Image 1 (cartoon, rainbow, N blue to C red):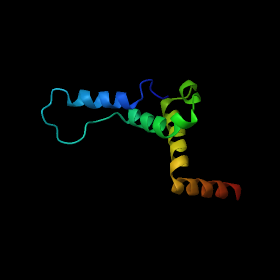
Image 2: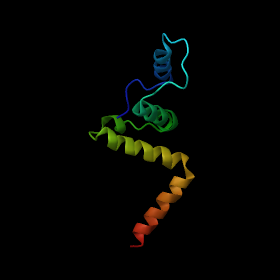
Image 3: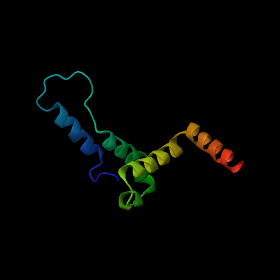
Image 4: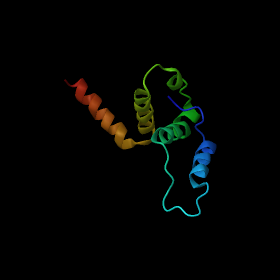
Amino acid sequence: MILPNVSFEEFQSKINKWYEGKDFELGDHPIDAQFALDLIFKTLVDDKEHYPYLTTMPESTSQTNSIMLDLILSKYSRKYRIFRKHIRNDSDNR
């Protein structure tokens, strides 16, 4: 399920909170993996194609993450699309 405040502004807010009160910090700030996946999905897929059912489905977060990952890889990874095609062909030939 996509978090409600997934945006570049919220991402920047998380960065600002991390650096707050620190004069020097070596390395990048930490970010929650769920927020990262949600932001990537929203930016690359959902803003253009709109998948509202991902926020209303009664499935677990892990199941929704699996759907989101499949949609991202299907859209942006030729290697993944070829892999999926081979999997389908193998199962059709059985």
